[in-house]
Length: 97
Length: 475
Image (cartoon, rainbow over all chains, first blue to last red; front, side):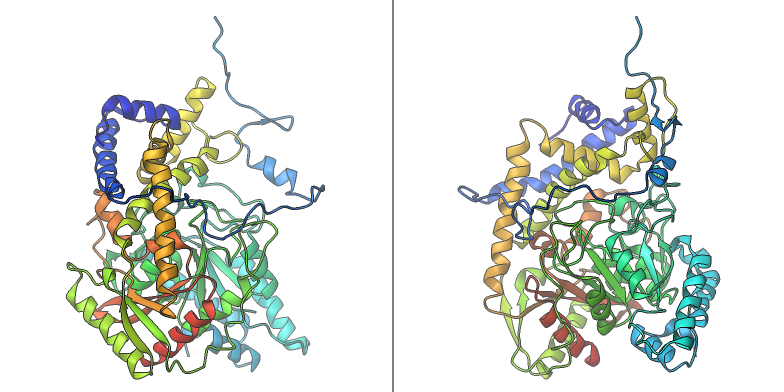
C-alpha cells in the first residue's frame, strides 16, 4: 500500500498534527515501507478466526459504583497550563464573523 | 567494598548485619551517578534529598527496632521516567511532559515505598517508550557503558544502564515489545518481563495498553525474583491484573533434571551474528549438562509477529496519545485558536517516532482500512498465541537469543524506522502472547554483552525463575 501526500494530509488532520511539507514526503515514504512490510499478513488465512484484543483472559471486570477518595484537586489543577478561577482556559473555539 | 556494586541479596544481608547503613549504601549510588552519569545520561531526574531522608528512616528502624527488615528495605532503586512518583517530575522522555509533576504514585511505586525501597531517580528512555535504542528521548541518548559510542538499547535505556553501571541496585522499566529485555541484553544485566497481567500498570504512562508490562532490571535472577514478589498481584486500579502473585522462591533452587527446553527453529535464522549464536548454543549445552532435555520446536507464525506488532501497537498508541492536547497538563503551544493549539502543541511537543506511530495507528484504524489491518492483525495475534499454547504442551520453557546482534552504534539505524523495528524481532512475540520472559547475560562478543532469552508459559514465572537461576550459576 503506497500512501500519497493527500492521504498523509488527511491522517495528520485526523491525528491533529501540524506536519510540515518536508515531513509529508518523509512520512509518505516511511509509512508506505512499513505498510509494505505489514502486508505479509495477507499470506495467512484468517477466515473464522476470532480477533484477539487482549491476552490477560479477563472478561467484563466490574467494581462497585461508589464514591471514593480520588487525586488531590490542587495537585491536578497545578498542572493546568492556563487556569482562571479554577477553570481551565483555552483559546477561542469559534471565529467571530 | 563498593556498596553500589552489591546485589539486592548482598546489600540486604549487609544492612541486616549492620556492616553498613542505608545512608552509606544510598550515598554510594549517588557518588556513582555523579562520577559517571554526565557521560552515560541514564538519569533525567535525581531525587537525592528524598532518597537520603528515606535512607535515614530505614537506618533508624534498623537501630531502634527488632522488626524484621524487608528484603527491599533500604535498597536503592531507579525508575523509568514513565512510572509516576507523586510530586516528582515525570517526562516519559518527551518535551510535552518536560515539566509535568506526577499527581499520584503508581501502584508499583506505592508498593516499593511500602517495602522501604529508596528511589534514587527517574531514568532516561525512548520518548513515550517508542524506539529500540534509547535514541528517541527528548533528553538525548543514553550511552552503553561497555562502549560509549554504542546504544544502550531501548526503551528502558536509562534503567538498564543505571543497573549495569551500579548507579542503583535495581531498576524498573516497562516492556511493550522488548524494552526491558533488549537493553538488558545489550548492557549485560538481567531483564525480566512478567506475564501480562501480573504487575499493575496503574501509574505507568500508557504506550500500547494490551502489550505494556512493567519489568525489572537487576544484577541477578534472584534479585528480579525478589522484586517480582514485591510487585505482583491483583490491583483494583488495573482490571487486567489477573493473578495473585506466585511464590517463585519455592522452586527456584530445585534442580532442573528432566525439564524440557524448546529451541524454536524460527529464532535461529540465517543472518544472525554467528558469534552471538555460538554463545547462545553454549548456554543450551549448559542446560543439557544440568540434566535438562533440549528439543527443537516450531513456532510457525513467528515471522508475522513483528508485522502484527507494528499494526496493533501504533493503533493503541494513536488512541493513548490523544490525551496529550495541551489542555489540562504538559506543554501548550502559543496559538490563535483552539484547533491551532492542538495542532501546534502536538507537533512541537511530540518527537518524530511518536508522531510517526500516531500517523500509522490513525491509518490502520481509519475507515476503510480497519478490517484490512487492525482486525487482520488481531486475528493473527490469536494464531500466534495458539502457536505458543501448542508448543508449551511439549516443553516447559523456550530458549532463544534476545537479539540477533550485540549493541549497534549510535545513529546507525536512527533514520530508517523499519530497520530499527527489526531489532525487536526476537522479543515482540512474547508481548503478543502476554508471556513471561527473561534476558540473561550469556557472555561477551568483541567485549559487548549477549543475552539469551528464556520464555515461560503464561503465569508460570516459577519455572522461568527456577531454570534461569540454575542456568545463571553456570554462565
